[in-house]
Length: 235
Image (tube, rainbow, N blue to C red; front, side):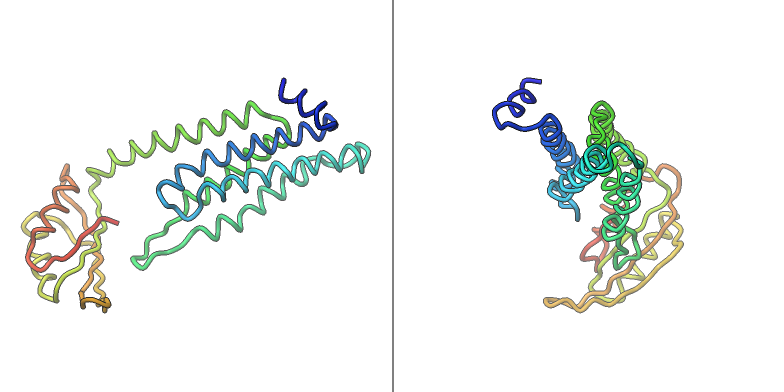
């Protein structure tokens, strides 16, 4: 309230203009806080993107309110521009979703995060501060909680998708022998030949089904020690 009074009198702003500035500052902070974690992990959309999305959504709602108050003289539908924000944010989400070389879909979480960030911006723009701040906090809690749960669940999941680089074709036979000895079922196998600038490798993307309670880390560690294997990672 003190900041509101300071802006109102020191800069000779109207109450509407002061409220608009505070809303935009809050939206930049809320959006940036969601993007910060993704920035640290080097995801496609980070601090700046999320901050701008939230700020833009807020500014649209402030503009909507301005039109309603001062131009349309209290007539019209206040929800129309909010609906356009919700549908329009889809182009950013679509741009962040991609299919990798290993036929894996990436960017869904980024798209969903951008969408909820836009919703937070709309909440701030309409003056629903409790919803916006609560939503921001819940997004952070969900992100941390499900990251922990996901690691625990996936650690002993019966399914794995592996990307494996080998020195030559013979590593494939060694790999299949290992899977058979561990009673691991191969559900899909795709072979690719990679001509890297420093070496020529054979790459395989392998989908497997594991026996019950077999550790993924144990399998990765044992595959790394097989003859002819250069590199292995779980997708």
